[in-house]
Length: 384
Length: 164
Image (cartoon, rainbow over all chains, first blue to last red; front, side):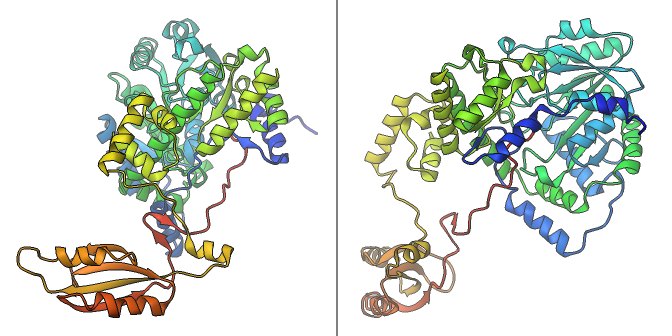
């Protein structure tokens, strides 16, 4: 047979997959390995989805997505972050941030262009850069710095081929929130070297200490920022697959062009449910965020009491404790913890080399289970 | 501080320790505050939320009967409806009493072991109170939700055990 695409074939499968396969076979597992909310979509949103289905909204929408939804997204960004995007020409609805990221990279990159990625980072960033013909360039971050990006390291990594810097804040897997000063420094770098900024802000509403800084709202950032957001995390809508891109007109136009040929449109029913999510007020989001925050405090304190250094996660729903004192590498730690105590965590190494020595624990899990998991992890540490 | 009450209202079994961690307050402060609320009657007592229909089925026990009773009362000078409402509230059979707008004045919840015992209570005790002019009794046939707790089958967790 003829060889398959070399870039795709060279991309290793996600390290998360292996743990899924093991955990799925076992009984009595407490999973802290889940990258999605443990809430079900709020009923008012589900009800809107049911209504949409009953009334036959089962067709395509325009490529860019329902105008009403784009208007609501732009209005919401204007209110929360004081940033202006045109619903007509600078916003499109995607099937989740996953598609948004893919579109942004395809539109921004020419073959061989480099994208600077601060790691540890979400597992899809580097493969998506490669699939778009680009070359991911890693910049490490350290837990001693709270996983804040060091702009001098970013600048040192810039070459004539550098096209964009890709940032996720609040971050999966670290829960880190990039300080405003860091984001401002990255904007300055982008201006100086004429780079684009791709900002994955899917966790923007899930911050616990202070408010979220929207990258696109920073001075000088708007014209070179591709802002990615969605409904999955804040509204517990992961399975609906609906997100959005806000970007300067020229970029947004080309994103729509790729989207119209590859995806056509995001699911109509999901878009209508998202309209309800944004137009129905924030009470349920606030309640879920308050609940994550309470569990975050209990879980992080518990990890620290077990002797695991854990940087304070300021956002998302992940803790990323250091497991160095166990003497094990993160993969062995996660595997042994799963086999002996039936607690599933994700080894930090799957998120990049700087994730080694850590494991990702999702606290989007019921409080009694978190407490039980802490007990089991303590027993595991004691057995080493 | 209000946050502590909201937490306890949702889960009265939370320890002071856990509440302190969740709110970022010192444990001693949480304990002192809860004690003060208990003493002042802000926190009346702690109790479980029970789905009696499920419980009776499981324990094969007798089903309690609940009825909403709308009561029309002739108001009196200086006290309005208060004295009648207080008299009604004192009966152990009465679970709740509200002054409401609309066609009647008071809405009460009454429980008993049988339809007979509830209707006897209404006709012999409630209706005979001075200035009670009329009552309308609505027996509860099935409880779907009470005080924010929906008695529905819990939704299974459909998430995969490990996801990105």
